[in-house]
Image (cartoon, rainbow, N blue to C red; front, top):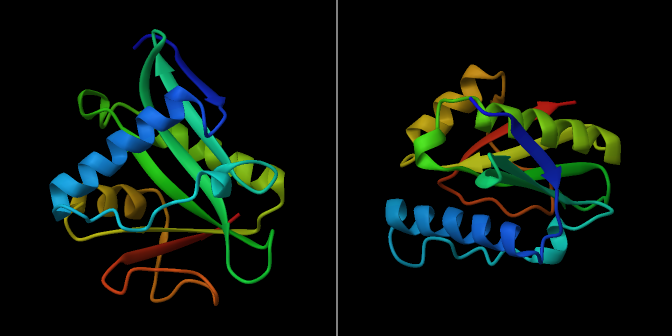
Length: 157
């Protein structure tokens, strides 16, 4: 595989916007029109408490992942948002590289625990998180939004 390049990029930049739209399109395709109702605020993914990492392969977008603060105590807990990898690159290591990079960034920011949520129509995502040591949990931290039917995970950094 050509060298994978990972970089933190501005959430209002074209690359991040394109990746967020791709992730939303896939959620709607899997769960139906209107499935992506969360209305993720771009500012939530911006520094100093958030980040968005873009992966490129041979200068082309390969995937991305975001991080935002959650809970009632700013800077204590974060949530992984919109991990998305181009379908032709899935199971090639791009997703794992993105997750390792966003976890490193979460530690740099000062988070000690991170969370994520997926759904039953994303069995490959559930298997990916389980395979890479994420722990199933029942609830998000107080003050955080979680879909009642969502499959929730956490990781201590």
